[in-house]
Length: 171
Image 1 (cartoon, rainbow, N blue to C red):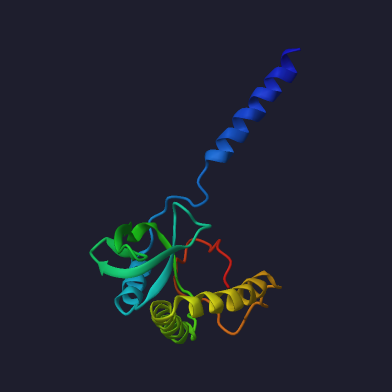
Image 2: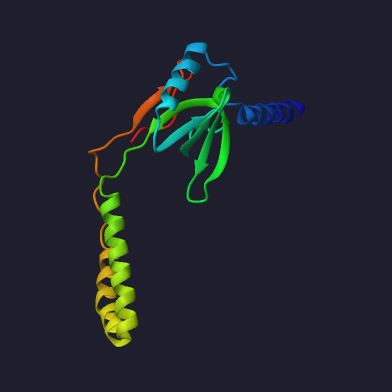
């Protein structure tokens, strides 16, 4: 009767220890890796995806802020909240694909918003009729089938540590 209980206890302890094990060993990067990372980050512009030792299966979106001796300072999103990442903790630096239609779409959005506000202030009845006609069309279009994925742009791996594998799938 003791053997099955002992077996279950050992199995439970092994599963608990395995669940708490880190995916990557806590090895220090080589000096050549640090030098390569610094050269990539010096000329980086725009948004980057950072893969860290703490979360090797998750991309951390980072807008490059500052580079000190041992840390990378990222500005996050619209709030411009800064986050520091130790250079020893960086596994990979990826440049995500950039949309070429972003500035055009933003300008059309601003123009439509300005036109809508102008019509609303000039004649609220015309604005209501316009929303009553265009609103269902936009709703039906948004509920339709999803657009097919575009594969014309891909991730660009700017830096990858030589001693650790990349666990994040590339797009």
